Length: 260
Image 1 (cartoon, rainbow, N blue to C red):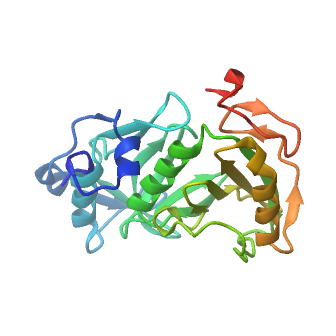
Image 2: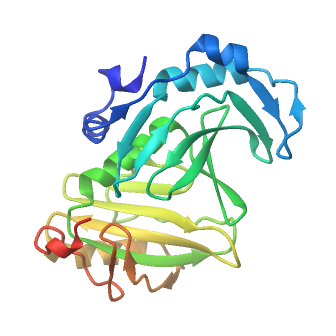
């Protein structure tokens, strides 16, 4: 069942997709007739087991889906007439998503995980398409609340050491390899890998509260929950497209200049 027709999706994902567009998708017959496999240098090779079924499942569930998150560009899903799988270092991938905010492709592995390659460095960023949607839906739900962005770095390929004490409960549905969510009715914290090339990986911690006066306590709790973190000043708010002083709150509810 296509996700836009599925009544069982969560209320927050349903809210994210309320204004989604749906374009024509490839049929199962078209995929079976045109499916092919190739290496990264373009040599055609035999199709791996399960590739055709994986492309059909993707297209039947997400094909033609397009929704907005932070920018006016859409998150576009679909094979777009090309039922090809490509052998990569992470496994067989399908070029089937365009991230409108990054204006960059996101590839999907046959097991449903996603891979983004920036500056020539691939990274698995989502454990599944459902996790990706849940993360986007949570961000859409809280992005207009008062928030603060913090930066930290780790050695290449390493995740921050997280204690978690003092944070809201982990949001398992929205948490994946490159971002983690904690949240309840009052607050939310988002840890996201933003750059993973060069000599360090750069992560952003975003803290959200209903009331601006509650932000300092959540920021302090987030710092304690990441013991030993190598903190860096984060002077740009991606959510608001605004330069900010380090740890300066963004107050979208009262400051219209912070809206996109």
